[in-house]
Image (cartoon, rainbow, N blue to C red; front, top):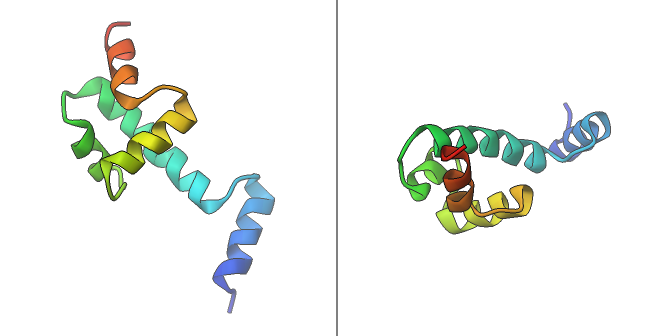
Amino acid sequence: KISVYYLAHLFKSNTGITVTEFKNEYRLTKAKRLLVSTNRSIADIASEVGFCNSSYFAEVFAKNESIPPSEYRKYHKNN
């Protein structure tokens, strides 16, 4: 039986990122697609892609993209 901690260690040693980072990257990729292709609220998108609340989603999004989700939507819908 493999422990969760050992599995997380193996994941990071093979991918270079943590499981949480991988999960957030996956979620953000899906969120970016939804931000540009729909007019759904940011809170709805945050919930759909698996974030517990929209504030945390906005924080993670801005940290990774260097721009808040609302600005990302404006920029990419106009270009």
